[in-house]
Image 1: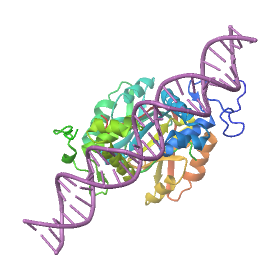
Image 2: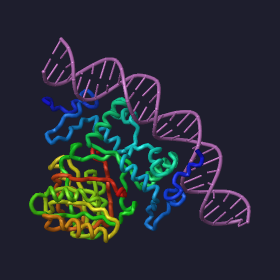
Image 3: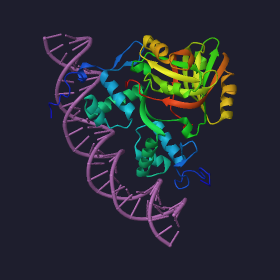
Image 4: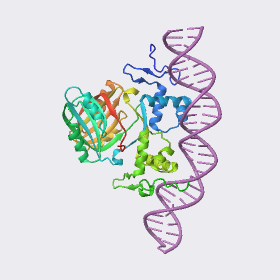
Length: 174
Length: 174
DNA sequence: CCCCAGAGCTGCGAAATCCGCAGACTTCGA
DNA sequence: TCGAAGTCTGCGGATTTCGCAGCTCTGGGG
């Protein structure tokens, strides 16, 4: 990868090659793949031909790229909902502090179905985890009986959701 | 094949009517619609016929239900990615405390493109906001020049993301 | 009690989309 | 220089989507 030069001009597919790997192992995306992702962020069911027209590629090429992005795990095409409308009445963000290696704690959280989101952070919490539950009892149970007893966990602080104001999936679309 | 009568026991569409409204104005979902959502949470591009086979409905009926769910805003079908792989290198959760009515603050946050997620909470923060930025400068700018100057905002605390461990969209699928 | 309007489902052709594949081009390294 | 790998395009055939007409059930008026 001697010539870095991501997008020398704009949308010529030949200019912007895909599939180089950064040192973290995550694939480097070119402008065209980014464009495809943007299209699918607006509408996950948009036909390949329409996407192709938007990014300047044939239908088949778009299809191949999308399949590759899905296989690589770069993106996923899914239905998302407001949990409240599908019967989950209690949500909370939980800040966690722990001793020693955080990875096992994070992994344990990741394994819990009620945990929707796990991120390791810098700041006064080591880990933030978002929890989706059916009711208060369920939430209490998860926090007290499943999270606080994890080895290494020193303390937790909960932020119960009162109102979800915004939830977007428009990364790269601005 | 007129005597299809797929599953007379549990999944008969007539048993579980849709479109009742709870007092909050959010539509009440029945078991069949929930099933459709689950199918689309596994694969947002799954064909209507396959979904129909899974939930016991014709292709056309699934199509109508999906369209209605989208129109009502109950769900959206979109591509989701890890922001890090699409060029946003800095993310943070910001806890905010404010005086007086929180709605205007939340609305102002909602209007910012860098803000991905806004939720009003109970606990030691009034509002949690997730921010997606391209780099540290950008992040600093958003927090200091755009958030902290909002009228009413008393203090903020930032949690810079080090590693995203989990991110699912499987509500209702467990 | 009858009738009508509304909601939802089914079935069915026509149109559009998806899919697999072969051929061509480019890059990269032996 | 040649071959392997990676992509793109174009093209039929298989699938899927789409729009519509018809049917059933429900819930009011009159």
